Amino acid sequence: MICDAHVHFFSPGFFDALGAQKGLPPENRVGEVALALEWEAASSVAALADRWVAELDAHGVSRAALIASLPGDEVSVAAAVAAYPYRFVGFFMLDPTREDALDRAAWAIAHGLRGICLFPAMHRYPLHSPEVARLFDLAAASPGTAVFVHCGVLAVGARKKLGLPSPFELRFGNPLDLQAVAHSHPRVPIIVPHFGAGMLREALMLVQTCPTVHLDTSSSNAWMRYTPGLTLAEVFRTALEVAGPERLLFGTDSSFFPRGGQSWILASQVEALDAAGVSPEHSRLVLGQNFARLFPVLAPND
Image 1 (cartoon, rainbow, N blue to C red):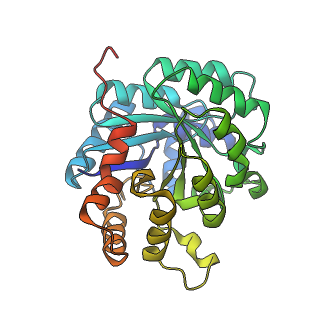
Image 2: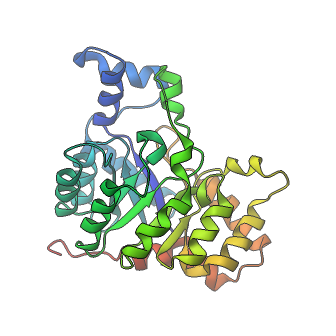
């Protein structure tokens, strides 16, 4: 069983929001943004959900976490999850500094979404803030809800290609800043993607001290360039030594079409697991069983 813990759902609303940030007129936004990015824009959320199911089938992936990749687009992922509750787990990006953040999060959770995604460097807030603590309170009151926190290096290629500013502040993305809120919310699973995205050392320290923290393995892990000589096999070996096999979640960071699912990432990570000497039993945990345990399939009325 393969489960992909990290897939971005670039809905028509996502394209429209980027077009609005560029100041494009409403009638042209989706098409012009798609043309500039050289991506395909789906005609509807339903069509995009269908496309992703076909893509998962083509690559032998049982289930995937779909991420609404701009604040406010949680309605798109909620619709996709409602259409395919046995294939998708819904995540949504949220800016906790917005006045309506709690209301948006409560709506999303009530509509079946199960992962609150925080990008502190993007939205420029500290992880030890009261706004973040309130979101963790909401997650704790909603069993089955996880908090996904992007730490480390953050770059959004689409924004650069569109000429949009990216005033990110990486100082807000230190995994260690999650320690206090993790300890005060011991029932809330936390997911730190990309092995900490360049802050592997800090991510491992957090994992060592906080048993609710998980690492996702997604993307090309190009952040390894910041540690010369580091290999993906060594990253897996070290992460497994510290976190154990139950707290790593395979992911690809797949996003747009026509590229679709990045099957080469699965192949490279299976190769790295083999090179690290990881047993088949533990590899199965990483590649799908851990995700299935964190996010069991729910009946439609659950």
